[in-house]
Length: 117
Image (cartoon, rainbow, N blue to C red):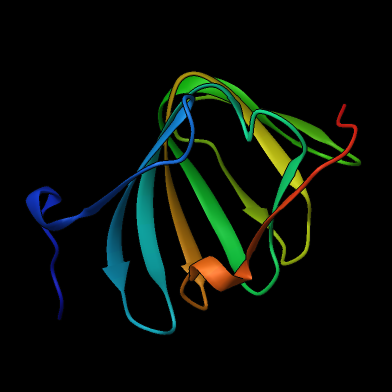
């Protein structure tokens, strides 16, 4: 068993609209809490080239937009984002838990520039 308290998370300010607290994990799975106010990324699309991401809404509201679908999210909703699926998130005090399998690493994360919805 491995436990991580909030005081031992790694904090990342991913631009002015997104704060992430990484809780870690192992090579197979990890987790983080993101707080989003506005659009993330501000321009273009985020994409994880390796991991499947499961998103669970802790509180707030918002939407996740892919190139094909817009999904409105509220408290306790969940969804899966497949590897290589470009998306952006819009939130109003949106607090989400994101788990990645295999575990997330910076080298598998990309921001695609270009026109978004």
